[in-house]
Amino acid sequence: MIAGEGPANNKEVGMQTDEFLGQVQNKAQLATLGDAMRATRATLETLAERLGPDDTRHLAAQLPHEIQLFLADAGMPMPERFSSAEFLLRVCAREGIDLPESTHHARAIQAIRMPGAECPAI
Image 1 (cartoon, rainbow, N blue to C red):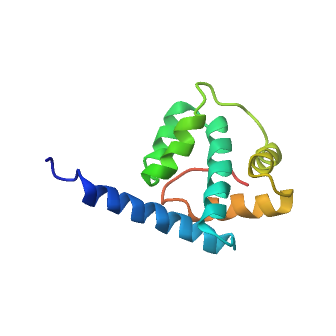
Image 2 (cartoon, rainbow, N blue to C red; image 1 turned 60 degrees about the horizontal axis):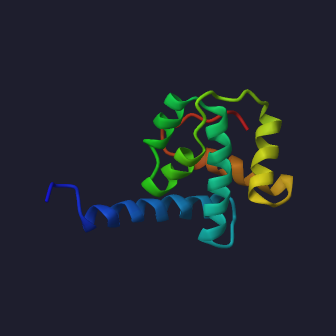
């Protein structure tokens, strides 16, 4: 077995994901990790529409593996240009909650994303 592979590595990735989602849950004041996962997915899938493939890969590399998949699933070959207001409306539609609440979640995710990650001003 190659160093860094196997169950121990998977466990570490899981802890990173739980830690990331715990931060989202805390910062966005969400009731469950499932709610944090839903808010994170809505925000990152929308962000992937706005970023080009290189920027999406750069951002994904800074996130836990399970969270990276949200960007990979939604990656666009050509970024769409849309305003911050449109960004928030798309997050709202994906998350399926009201706009002020989804805006709070998106801003919380932006605030706690991994160091160096770039995100549009929201």
